[in-house]
Image 1: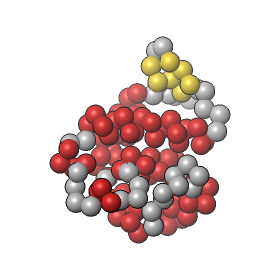
Image 2: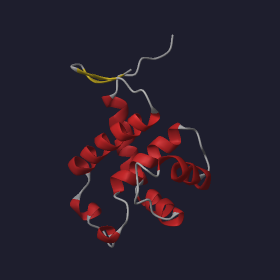
Image 3: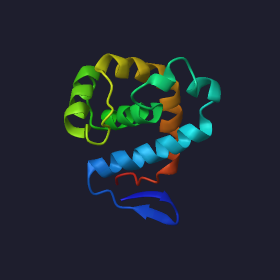
Length: 121
């Protein structure tokens, strides 16, 4: 069970539910913390996937333990395409993911502080 705030608790049954929860939080954080100059960079309006979707897949892909960008992309394409139907090509996905590394790290830190995850004893 993950605890987001003291008055709100969510039971995560499937990894897909976790992906959707992370996407919701990432999209909220993106709207709050990413500068307009960055979110309105060149060609971002013609992209198939939003920055929030790419960051979500990046974070969730790391959680399943795949180190290879290509293997992770193939796994996500095969298993979670229904959650992200506008999945872009692998090269564009990985290139954009690298552009978003600093934003991803900021969100990762915010997520760590948002979820109260008990440490194993």
